[in-house]
Image 1 (cartoon, helix red, strand yellow):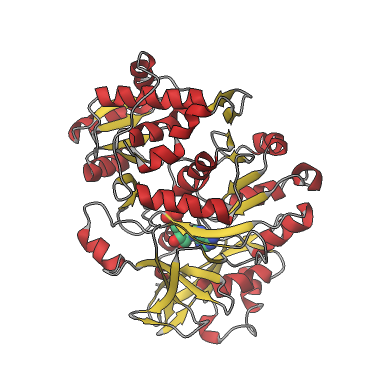
Image 2 (cartoon, protein in one colour):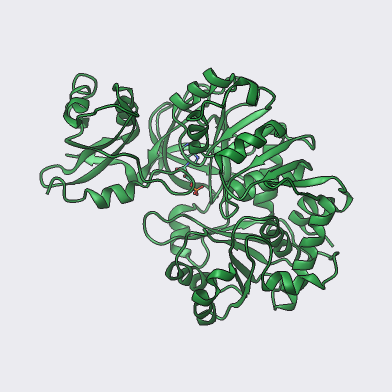
Length: 501
Ligand code: AMP
């Protein structure tokens, strides 16, 4: 019986006596043993009532067993719903209420707090701890280590991935077997992944980057993963010599650059460094190349679409751009219902086999963002140059409209970052009695630099039109970022809301 994703990602592990996962403590798990783990968990979950089309929500630490739960869900034809481990009980309550999963899997340490939440929404609670123990492990132990996967076609749901929801409530993006497999196949050829690759995997697996881009791709190509619980600088520096590729969010690269042990000797053997999930500063790109000789490949994607664009493997990897649309992905830049003139800024829309099927139980939101003819309105602002390279200039909701003029934060952030002593910046719009919104800059100084906000703003005076110039600025030691390295501008807007009032 065919099961689109399971047959491509997990079934081939039956033939792999060689290593699939290399763990931080040096332990190795073969493909075959890992598949046994998947099968045992699948039988245990089926015994707990999980069936085809049912959702299984998981809020568990990254571990081989946690990855196996993903495989087990696919084997049963269930819908995998991973949750950020940082979510509180109240947040989990929302997700369980919205997704109504049959099973909710959490860390044993949180079981007492989460049991009433699971009970309220009719989910059976099981536990899986970071060391692989827990009630699921106990139930799986005596189960058979092979399984016949449930029949699932490309249009069947494989995962519900909730958006990070920095404005309003998170929405559950419905991703099908076909969405996920097609994207992994495209990335395999775009980034030349083969079974000889060893991917240093330090990303969380509750997010599209670590779960789908990294894990799916590696499982599809038959390579190995150095599977770390998180980004631990010492572990990464120690294990990079064993890797051929690494995927990271920009903060991985800035943290590596902060350490003098990052040099050509350490990473000269690496085939590919990939960055995404948040903008990689052009300066980081240049510094990384100057130190290591490696040009980071930046790509752009999102929960709803997997990967949309990528800089080329061969050819010009342009700092500050996210490259060109991947094969099979159409991309256009719109202002309302019309395409903008070539090179102009507008809202990016994408269409292709990678694009999700809509938001779970939110038909209105789906209609607002996913057009009937398949184009998804990403909410990202961008422009495309003559060679098809896409530059992201920010989120549409971060656009500042001051006195009726549109101001793109990215343009100002790039200029502010050039001012001596500024490490990085975030430009936001704040309520203003005259202008509606006023431009405001949050500045982070370089180590040891003494910054005065007025001096930094003065440096912009001759460089941009007056209406774009920030009307206020503050210095912060660092910008608030979420686990994927994204600057949380909503928190900055809240913090400085009354500045001009
Ligand atoms: P998520 O759904 O959490 O993966 O977030 C997706 C959003 O992250 C996109 O809509 C973009 O705003 C942003 N993003 C992802 N990759 C990049 C990138 N390479 N450069 C700039 N923004 C990015």
